[in-house]
Length: 134
Image (cartoon, rainbow, N blue to C red; front, top):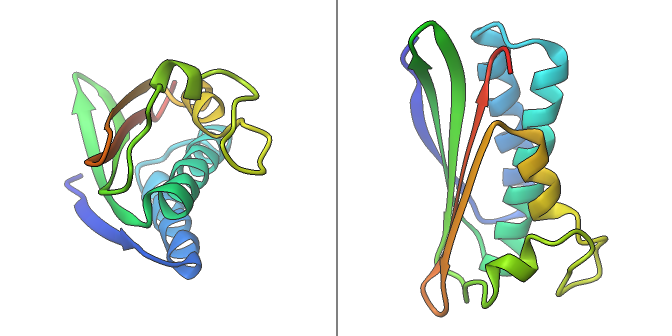
């Protein structure tokens, strides 16, 4: 199944559409409800961070295959201020806002692959992959 699309996230209502689209695609490839929930939760966390801290950006959604494995890869990109210390940002409880500080490390735990890159003044990119059966 070939699905590859890009969604713009600039306001709160875009988060809802983004989560719904991830859910639709996950269901379409036959991802179980537990893994769907994990992926949707991770999507919500990263998209919200991108909106709040990065001023919005884009989410690229793609169905990927590796052998017989099928999954969903999401790439979030913003042109915000960037993250000064990624290692610190990935610690449970660390926050620069008024949240619980579970966004980045929590999202990482919910997916199979998670990569974050950021440069001060240039923005942040988060790449996540969730396998259908993983």
